Image (cartoon, rainbow, N blue to C red):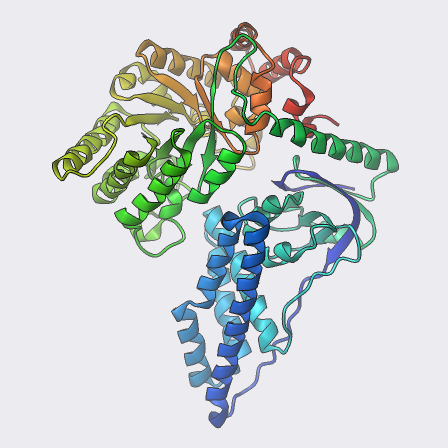
Length: 584
């Protein structure tokens, strides 16, 4: 049986299944005698203390194995355990209702998790799994248990309805072959820890528990998001061959780290990494990127109750700039709204959020908030090669107002003798059809363009990319999108500006070659995709890329373009560029 889910961690897992049963913690509900209330509160405090100790040990283990980036996930768990509101509500609940600590604590945490589960923003929604993780950890002590150990009898694919980040961290890496869950998303902390530990993972494989038993053969494809249960021997052998090829490719791709993304005839393309957190920069450096092409700064505004200060932002931006120097880092200014809601700033869910109050529109409506971010970026520019760009520009008026704010910030810093890079490049994302067709005018006001192909495709085709009923219509290779990219590149180059792409098209080796042929100067993608794109670019010459792009522009459908790319490039590109995800 074959099931589909979400590709959460790349890799191939082949082996017997180990079904991890959901943990059922029986919490008795009883009245606490009046003279025992304080002792019950002490019992609760002790459970928190023991849980805090466990998380600290877990954090230290992950920091040693993976580094501070992944370990920081568990800092959030400690913060939850130290939350004064949690302590206040539970202790008051014990005193006023005289119910036992386990019940009061469970009710509070279940309410918090339920509220998070209803949030539309995926990042915030996935935090409910962390709340449940903490809930289970504390409850184990309150019901007389302790730490949970997921002991694998031997090499196995762990299959569960859900699994907490703590459980993933505790899995024996010498035995776990893969992880499959029925719920979750790519942004869950469990998925992040799995990626960090190199464990192939598929999440959201609904119904998998129903169809598998411990010991049965199972296959995990963390590239495609597929799971196969009880496969025939031929399929098993095919997956094993793919896994072996993947391991070989990793070694070869690492050898490209110090080499430039340069075509066979010497045309150089800059490759950048897309990041969301300051700590992600280590991975970008590790894969040999030329810099960061897209730093999404929304993390500062989401998952918190108050605005970040200018100083807080400055410290983070400076850290990234210093680590990367002399390589560039492009900070995209706040792209809130749409699916990224910061309720304390007045963003709310709208009927058509992607056509509404988001991106630069939101920033310009909060000039003081925007100004603080601009000041932080400008100040950080004194410590590295910093660039900034605005998201969702749809008119010259918006661009003029945004650049005017930059000029004001620069003048303030100069007047108060605060250091900043006076040559800082200020660019914009091209994501809307209006920006495409005013690109000749906008190029005069900016230093560079970065094309966001995800939103550009969505807006050009009038298609919500998150709408499951329309997902088959979402086509970045549509002739309309390709012609929009070509027009933007031509306008940028005529004005002497460089043009990059930071949408998902940049991370596919075939489309990356197409973009290079269209004249794109810089590509930014995930750190995972970067080595394969570099391998692809180093396998073609510029004449081939230009001919390919010209031919693609003359085709009438995305399907024809895709077929063209496969026919023209697959015989040329090395297998390690195409990746095992495309070779069966």
